Image (cartoon, rainbow, N blue to C red; front, top):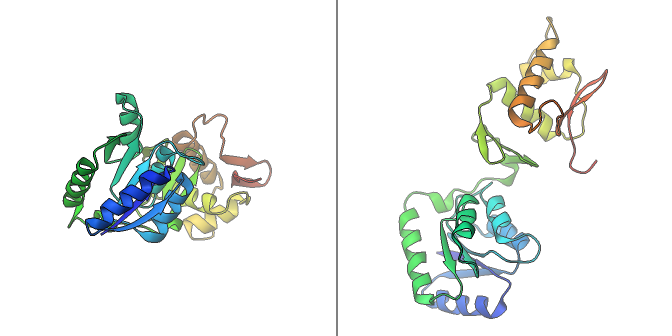
Length: 233
């Protein structure tokens, strides 16, 4: 099995690689949070050892990003031992939490136990194409499961609401007229009242925007139509 080890302490990484390779694991290493996310996508490891305090993005943020496309088991490595730090780690998607300094024998036992729990479930292989997820700020849309989350919590959308949000998120900054939205989402040339688009936009804002009256992402181009705010205008 393949284990990804990400920590900015080179001596620690070297020691972990030596011990894990002696146990028969294939080991891939990184030194910061951005590398953790990219290596998780590229290498599809069976388990990740992820340090919390790292340059770039920290381990908690990296774990959250990895959870957008994979359910791979994650063990957080950290010098912090307070209960609140552990809770934050678990809320970000970690499966286990080891406080530094740790006994390498205990760590190896935790790795084996976690791999046993996920073996045969297909969990460690449940990688998705990153393009299957769309994210903007607090909004996360999973195109495979047709699930939408606001600040990590699922929100219930109708089929048309989901299709409308997906279309807008796939084309940030592009303004769609009501006629175009009806054609793209409803799938036919609508001959009735175009205000059905306005109703769906209002409901979407109520469900995914933090302040629906002052939307941050689903915006109106007055006299033209609607668009999703680009992260890089």
